[in-house]
Image (tube, rainbow, N blue to C red; front, side, top):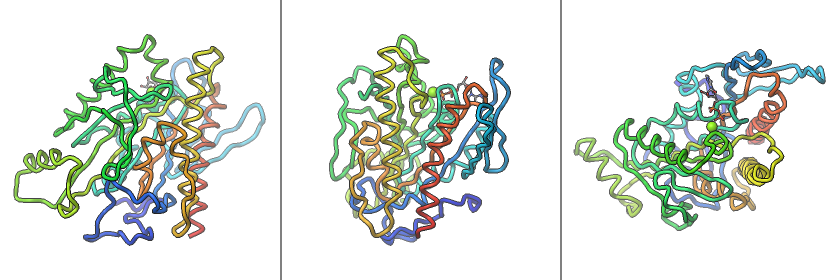
Length: 361
Ligand code: ADP
Ligand code: MG
């Protein structure tokens, strides 16, 4: 069913011997020294949204998994190839080709992370909205100027990042809500979005300058005779204190709507925000590249997770048998071609690394 996707195999071939069958899947506590093989695990998608009324006509040509454009200033042709390339508004298609597989892997016990990267107003939030229909335990936070805010309890201002052997890296005190239906999830997202509005004078500006992380903690264990509702309730109440003999798998699914990748404007506040954003997007690129550079038997060396709050919070999810999707969004408009090219270069950097690493195997 998923065989058309080239960069992710159904089962990890990494060197720790965890394949399918009954062997333990990765749980919330990764072996930090264990090298990851993101070459098999990173998928890159580019999505170009339809033009708005005030925009010049589409300057990008898309066919199959290729995207190309002519640079009118330089008369130079740009061409890129990715795992998937989409034009338009079909969220169901994007979900089934670029996201669904990763969600299933998260349900099986892998940590999975989806990033939406791109210029402001290119469609990151529009794209991430399609993936939020899952259950179990969820939290929702925002990182703005390197401080973390609980979007489910905005009076919770003093959030800290901690790490322990059981949970890996986590944010505390962060509200976690148990969810048992898609509607629960949608309600929590609306609540978080409403809290984002309240504290900002210019919501649109604020939302383009902050990262949000919607996180779902998924626990599962072998099915008992209980009904599915009871089963879920027991699982979620078991929290993090489970013993390994219970054969409980715990994984996280992270949905990340990144701050706009465009260059910062010139006023003082924007410059400050811009430098935090640049730093965290740059660190994110470096972390992914460091992880993918590492082949099966080499040590990962120093990975700069601590250089930004975003990568630090994601340390557990990006270590071990991590599954990652990067969805890069671009505007179709000619006046945005510079920013679109920057976004495609970021996407290429991720993609090149994964192809390169694969060839080295
Ligand atoms: P970003 O989060 O990157 O700043 P948004 O997701 O808020 O951008 O998108 C900006 C505007 O464009 C919104 O009004 C959104 O509804 C619209 N939009 C974005 N992507 C698409 C798409 N693929 N199809 C139709 N409309 C889109
Ligand atoms: Mg947005």
